[in-house]
Each structure stands twice: as structure tokens, then as C-alpha cells.
Image (cartoon, rainbow, N blue to C red; front, side, top):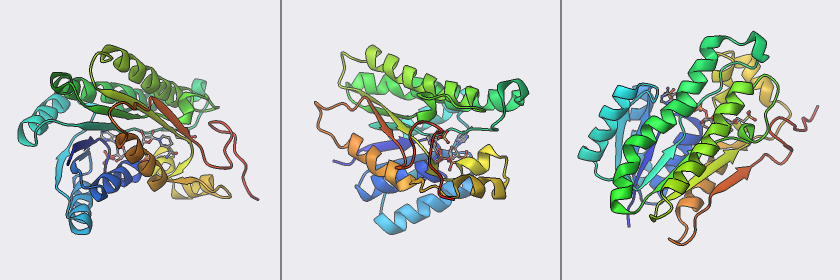
Length: 253
Ligand code: NDP
Ligand code: 8X3
């Protein structure tokens, strides 16, 4: 049966790849993100490639009022959400905590933590009402292993894991599943965003490393969502082959 899958941050990278996987699987998609033209482009591609049903709603997850309005609009116009993938997120900067730009710290916190809980707070009640649903939160290996220059990013991703665990406890008497997906190094626009659009620095970062691809994570997310009712994958960590912890990896010279 077709499910309705709401994905935050579906305009690029992992979120976009997840949209492809669910579309190919025959599910209905509700895509959000800030860049409207990217949302339209992804929708067009999914419709033409998979004949998928796709709805798009531009949304900045940091804006509490907007999130409430858009989520209620989605529930009214599209109907109940079966699977929520909280993927929108970012790292900004890679400096020692004492040197960090305060605004960058707050943007990470607002997007990765506040945004995730604002969206989930809007969508979860109708799942509870239906006694069914799946929340898939994109954490990171950074949430398990802190690394230099990433104290705040790592803390936001640790918070994602703990929020998932807490929500799983609060919904334990229901059929709702909660999963944290913790990817390691994935080659997307992540580093370009982290380095404030510095293309050379972003490309340099992946040099000599066979990083994971967004589709690798998307395949795993679909696998998680396609388990039978009795199976709940609570957490999963996926590293690149030459990655040992969050930021310990082997680089070919
Ligand atoms: P991308 O930069 O390619 O994608 C980030 C997505 O998040 C975009 O679609 C962007 O959309 C969206 N986003 C960012 N800020 C906001 C906001 N305020 N409101 C709504 N959407 C927002 O990076 P990735 O695909 O790599 O990142 C996706 C997730 O995966 C993030 O949570 C990231 O932390 C996590 N992750 C990434 C890893 C990696 O190595 N790449 C590894 C582990 C986890 P738009 O700009 O249109 O709003
Ligand atoms: C992103 C993965 O290792 O670049 O969450 O921090 S890493």
C-alpha cells in the first residue's frame, strides 16, 4: 500500500536521494526545504522518472509559526503522514569552540535540534491518533564521536539520538517506530555549506577518501521503513569503509 512520506531537506543530498528511493518504491511524497526552485526540480524529476505523486511545501524548519502552519496544511491537504524523515540539517564552520562564530552555532542548534522537534511535534499527534507511523531521524557519527572543530554540530546530532530515544519511550504503547540513522562521511553539499560556499575547500575535504554516497543512505532508510510491523530498527550507524570513528579516516595520498 502506498504510504505518505514527509521528508525535510529534500532539495539536495541525502534528503533528495531518500525521496528517489521512496518514489521508486511507489510511495507518495511530501517534500520540504527552503529552496523552492530545487523543490520543483526534484518534484519534476520524481514525477517523470517514477510517475510518483509528489507534493512540495517550502518550509524553513527553524520558523516555529511557519512549521505549524505548513504541517497543518500538509495534514489537511495531503492527509495523514505515515513516515516522517527528519533530514534537514547542516554544519557551519569547523573552528575551535573558543573561536566559533556564535551565529553559526545557533543556526546549527536551531536547524538540527529545534527544527526537528518543531516538525515532529506537529506530525506525531496524528500518528498517535492512528496508532501507526514511523519517524526516521538523520543523526550522524558526529553524534557518537565528537571531533575537533565540531563541538556544537556533534552536540546537535547527539541530541537527535536522545530525542529519538525519548520519543520512542513516549510512544512505546503504540505501533509507532522511531529510528536514528547515523551516517558517517557522505559526499553531498554538506561540506560546501559547512565551508560557507568555498568550493575548493569542500572538494579538498573529500580528496583521497571514498566517501559514502547519498544513495547509500537512502537505500538503508528504505530498508528501515520496509520492515514488518514487529521489527523496529532503533539506530543504525553507517561509515565509509576507510572511516573508523566520526573523524578518523584513512586518506589515500
Ligand atoms: P545537504 O547540504 O546536501 O542537504 C541539507 C538539506 O537540509 C538541504 O535539503 C537543505 O535544504 C536542508 N536544510 C538546511 N537548513 C534548512 C532549514 N533551515 N530549513 C529547511 N531545510 C533546511 O547535506 P546532506 O544531504 O549531507 O545533509 C542531510 C542531513 O544529513 C543533515 O541533517 C546532515 O547533518 C546529515 N548528515 C550528513 C552527513 C554527510 O557527511 N554529508 C553525514 C551524517 C549526517 P534548503 O537549503 O533548500 O533549505
Ligand atoms: C557529517 C559527518 O563526519 O563530516 O555528519 O561530521 S562528519
